[in-house]
Image (cartoon, rainbow, N blue to C red; front, side, top):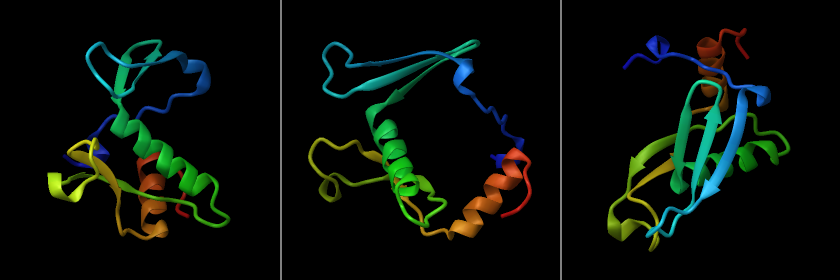
Length: 111
């Protein structure tokens, strides 16, 4: 699907009514439920940990400005025990390429 054809939604803090972190009965891994004014979104642990990893890597790095994670299917013998089959793994794209794409998607000037 063309990325430019997808709906782009920016959620501000005031748009989020609540966040619930929970472990469903019979499961081991945390889920995160985010409730906005118009929808409820539930993320699995692997997604949240990928987001956290990217956020910390960019936010705490002295000069890094962007990082792209791509959904990657990992064979059982290539992933750690307990890790999901599908993981968000760092791509090899340049920061400039990532930032230019983001600028195009959200309608701001190029970096």
